[in-house]
Image 1 (cartoon, rainbow, N blue to C red):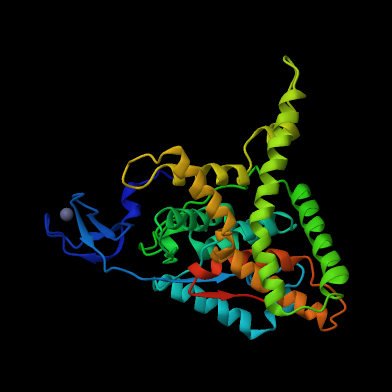
Image 2: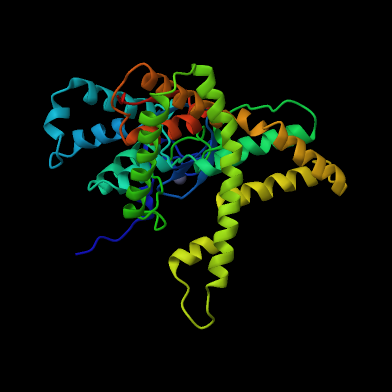
Amino acid sequence: MSKQFDPREMISPPWRKCPSCGRDKFGVHIISGSRLLRRCRDCWHKQFYPLPELRKRIIYLDQFVVSNLMKLDNPGVKGHERVVVQPFWRELRDLLFQLRQLQMICCPDSSSHEEESRISQYNAQLKKTYEALSGGIVFKSFDSIKSQQIGELARAWSERREAEYDFDPRRVLSGNPNEWNERFYMTSGDNPFIVPAKLKLYRTELHAHMSRLFRDVWAKEKQSFRYWYDLDRFAYQGHLGNAVVRSTKERFEAVLGYRPGTEISLKNLEKALPSFAETLLAGLQHIMRFPRDGRERPSEEISRLETEFGKANRIAEAPFVRLQSLMFAAIAMRAGQGQKEPPDEGTTTDVETVAHLLPYSDAMLGGVRR
Ligand SMILES: [Zn+2]
């Protein structure tokens, strides 16, 4: 026997006296944004009520925390016994969910959670755990955060002022964290553009690259913290430039290699699309060309602005570039001081995550990797 859906079941206590029919059937129907909709179960009378304004704290939980909270609630998963006997994890879980229900915190998820979960055999359980805490509020991609920060540097340069960052989390989140939690939240399935095997390969390559630097450069050349920090952040603009050249070349080859009437391979299709570096460059050119007052700058002025922006290496001042360079400089110093083993594979993800999300978070909670 199937049960018929009764829309009145969406209305729940606490009950109040209905202003229309007078019966005590005036309950909570929908909470959305900063409004509460009450509705009468008997006469269907409705009324909106404003809710107090919220200022939730943004707490970022890294994959180590998400993974342990997942193990706590899944007896079938390896590591469950180890987590269950540590009171810390139970207390942390209860506290986080309490604060979330009190509308005091928001724990957004990010592409790091998604990617690290997709290469785990427990992806479904991990996704359920981080989404229960985020309620579907997600940090935008790291590329989008990069574009915002570098875009502000370019705009400031074209307006002859210093770049200003307020690090308002609403700029980098999929939704407004200060809205009241709805009783239900929407999430989506696995991102089809994330291919776990490709992701694994990419991470292995990144780690091999860092290990080489660790052993062959950082451990051998004894340099100061400042030296490594500046070397790394001033090199970022060059990496972007190289990426533009490489993807332009690859697209040219992909287009030349295409024969009409044949199926274009996924690999070539990827190369045929503009890369992040190219999109960023086009964005910077747009900013230099069109000031905010609606004019269009003359071409000599545009090219002068672009050249000077590059010469001054303003991109080295982007908050995410400075943060990741600070962290890599710290790792370089440890190599110089005799640490034998390079940091593990997760470290590059940690560095990337902290560099992009720390300025927008009130706190970050994570495990310490060696
Ligand atoms: Zn009524």
